[in-house]
Image (cartoon, rainbow, N blue to C red):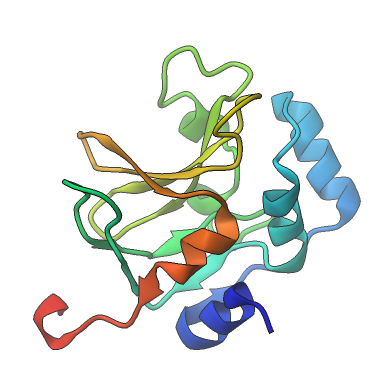
Length: 156
């Protein structure tokens, strides 16, 4: 059992259908990147989905608390949650080919961002406040899932 399996069992409302290796490769070709291997395997085994808004534990000074509404995937039930949509990639300047890819969202409009740029930091996960700052939150997608927790009474 992995941390991701446990988190899906505990917090998932709906998973998107699993993509094929060919669909992942086609997406990578279309946007001109290769996903970090751990994230690529995540897409093949889990493919995002809708979540029951578990709290994302803040990491580091100043990082605000938020919750997870969805993680993007391939072939989603809602076009707005499709991984690497041109409109989501174009939210950031100088992002062709993508150096950062929005991979999820929060109930207040925050974004979960994957670093896809070559070099140090590749595969790291960030939280982007709506109309605000970026905060580093995890080394990789598996570590991101360790940050999810049930809301406490004061969070609701």
